[in-house]
Length: 195
Image (cartoon, rainbow, N blue to C red; front, side, top):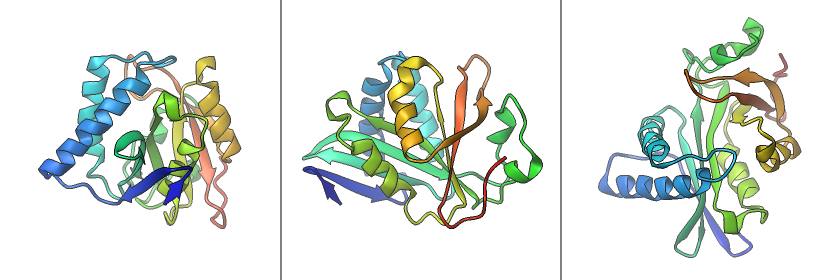
């Protein structure tokens, strides 16, 4: 898929080969650049944590990765996976939702875990193109993701609202972690997903 001179590639499975490790190193470099900016202000330790987390997430059921390149240069990436039946995703919400909403079966919900675009390529439709490719043909009822509630995250929040996401709650995924708004996008033609 090519848009405005950029190329996009969707990868359904990442192995543990040397090539996969090099690919993860490239994601870490983009992550470190993007998340050093406000509102995240993350540093080298956060990038190292991301590397470990991404390695674990890459082997989850339904994992999918989208890369955006400008020539050979990696300008963005997005990845996600299906929430497992025993997920703790919904238990982290500050205000619990009803049982029917939070029930998972391993196929119901696809989680967009990361969506990162380097500064020089923002506001050119790169994030939207990666998102479309990432969630296409999922077979899930809904897509979920998180976003910081900070005013500095307004561009991301605006994009998600434009794409049809709506807030269902706020969560903290671990002690000492910041709060995130949890958003849900119903898949067209799927059953209702409102709380």
